[in-house]
Image 1 (cartoon, rainbow, N blue to C red):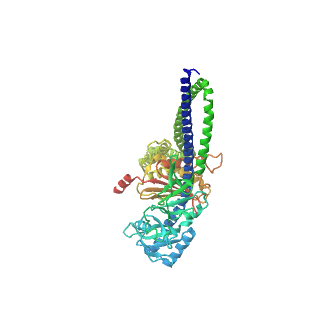
Image 2: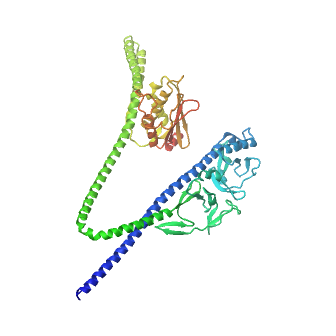
Length: 592
């Protein structure tokens, strides 16, 4: 080696050593990145699974407690309970206590008692205390709201949930007052037993940081070290708390609990029951998989590094391939934009088709009523002809009074035909205006006039109020809904003897309720009655396409109301239409 080449050789070795160091550093960084990404992705997926499992367990607990809450509300509205607190019933407190306890046993609760608003006992088992302290649930119930609470009783191990519902009585001067409280208590183990077999531990803490209920017995009464002491009103001094201080550390951007095993904590607020759900998802398998991916990636990058020199000659082909991929990406973006535009156009077409479907439903109803409408118009036409001939004869005979009477009758027949045609034209016209104050009595009258021929052979029981009843909606669309309900009722009770349809209009403080009842065969499938194209009528008949109830359901929803259907115990069906009351027009009606 010459003196001139020696420095160059050393420089080359230094450059190669530097390149090797850079490559090793890049390899280390890439391996760590792979581990970090794998761990982060795995823990994100584990968190999602943990949240889903926790949400399922939470929904199970909330649903169970909601059932007991409804039992308390139902008991508070029982006639025996209201009669006892009002002092008008013949049933004694002891007998009512036995009835309430039997109801509690059937519901799976511990106690169901009747209290005074101040906590004194009105009806309860013999061994029950004479007075209860005014806890949070009783305070709320005494003010007319539904109350709930939880706590520990007896030996400090008996955990209970409690619901309190107010019992209202009507005062002679009007209005209502809270005259009693129904309180339902249940053992916490009743609602947590269903989750004992879950593989994932789940526990629920209250606002004081104490684990009140869990699917593992060893988790109950755990609390964090250093936290404030729980309220003695909820947890007596002899409650066996277990203080824990879990060690935590951050791995891949996630805070992990490392005692005794590594686990990812998840939580979910449950304001409905005043608790917070918690769970821990094991992450040891995830970290192990991340390490495996890191080693595999390192080996793969080492193999790739040995091929870099040979692949350098192919960089041009790689550049061409990248250019091709860029072109494909541009084409893909254009395809996505085109598909987005097509979806937007399809959505607009769907909205238009929906509007046309509503109109088609009205026209279908008009088609079904065409024969009856022809009959309704034919009678006045024949009467007009007869009255006109008689008027001419009376005029020739010099009887102007009889002539005037016949002309007056012709005018009445013309007015009747005009009303029928005007209602049909309004019913058939598409309505696009937003919801506004509408007189529900007038809507029902219009629907009855349109459906007059279909209802002529039925017994219709309808006593309209003598004043307007204002609701928020659209007059034409509401008339379509009422016509559909009347048509379905007429079809349902066509074979009854005698066929009867009953209309009931009920005014409430914030809403108006219209019920359509019939004595037909009832609803075959209440779960599918509002599905489009669902019909129990024979195929091939001209009784409609099964769109009436589906269209009516969506029309009522667009006004912010509700439409429900159910079978009556005595036979037949009842459809209930509930709409928000138009307060301003209602006030004007009262002032006038």
